[in-house]
Image 1 (tube, rainbow, N blue to C red):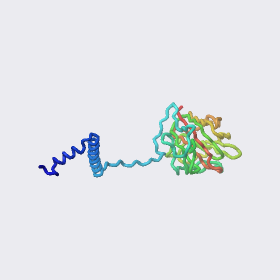
Image 2: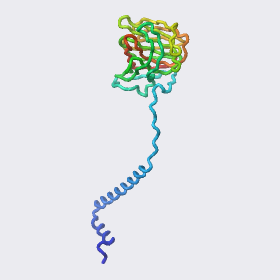
Image 3: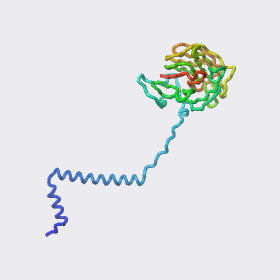
Length: 277
């Protein structure tokens, strides 16, 4: 007689004990699960023993280093917010505009307390409540694509007293080009000027008052640069037309704020688009 602990006896007992088909299926499932678990454990051991090579971390480049957008004669959207935009945060990557770095400086006219004087960026533009608005300082510059002759338009809010400016034909490294600026007083209205800046210093002979027209509230902003002249509409009305910039050449474009006696003007940029003309 075979021993009661022999393999034959054990097999017979196993066979008779699980004659029920549903029970045999359960046993097989448990066996398969145990096998897969062993394979998974071996796989984990292999991964632990030889971890994949990590990719080098990419540094967050300064937004002032973004590549320039190449404009054409078709409109390129630069800033677009829908009517439901809320919240606050940095400028989205999808918008091809960015802040000049803090500490970017050049010298402007200081005829009196209402003019820019020494310009030095200490703030930046951020998204707030469906607009790009200046934050964290009084002086900020929003970098737009470079161009020769161009059209720029959008919906912009200009509120309160203070100063705002545009740079056109601007060379970032040499700090040369033209600056158009508006200094708005609390009672006397707005005074618009143009000045040429060369090597970070303003040319005193180039300072010229363009207009004394007030432009407040939210409305269309339109700028045209063509054949070394500039025209500007703000809050839906012409401020000046075809003002000469005799030494103008292709360069970068920027919109920003400065801080005269009454501080920086509150600018809200709801939309901007740009094209060559």
